[in-house]
Length: 325
Image (cartoon, rainbow, N blue to C red):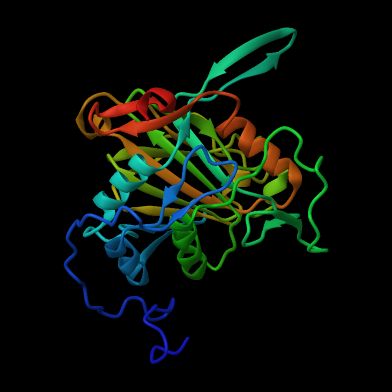
């Protein structure tokens, strides 16, 4: 990439010193552009100009490789989002996005159990078999024709809004990966969490790259190897009881999980009491779903059939959108 023709830094060149503009929070005009779609409960504004202008400065630091344990392959940016805008980015997304508090049922034997998701969630995107065209319609990736009406029966996919899509595109450049989904979690307090899991679903492929951004309160991100059966070649394998790897993710940090990580490692954000955790945290993840099952899965577990929630700045909390409008 020729530095004379672009102000975006390459992978080899992003460590070079770059000019930093001092940004100031300014009021955007009321007629600022916004993303909208029939699947959105309300429009989502574009980034304010000062955030938009900071994107060519990403990433803000060199990535640290973490690959000193079996099957672990991480890039850890501390930070990826410049300190000059990370707080504004957090506040913008918390205020402008719509969220859900999803409930769903799982069957354990013959017993149905209702699960209440312990965080706010939202999702945008569609799997590789389809794509959005500029007018918002979905077409088949191969034929460019409108998709059959029954391709997505339960949930209608929604396009990634311009603000998050700008972040997606610059993330693709510096992670050498492609993404078609954006999941956003809001942890309102230390009581909100996500238990140990891995993003190893078949629809993500065998070696998925997942870029995970943290904004707002610092929270612990724990990782542990999946249990491995002992063998003659490996009599003392990794155990679920081994001490987990802990990353204290600060606002603006990004972890790229790639390669064999998802197939072999679990990760979680546990509950925490006191401190920063009460101030709220946003987690943005970009990933690529290869099959239609990925679209159904992500909308089921991140939108569901519940009510829309939106941040109410005057109350300092998420409220049902109908009563917050």
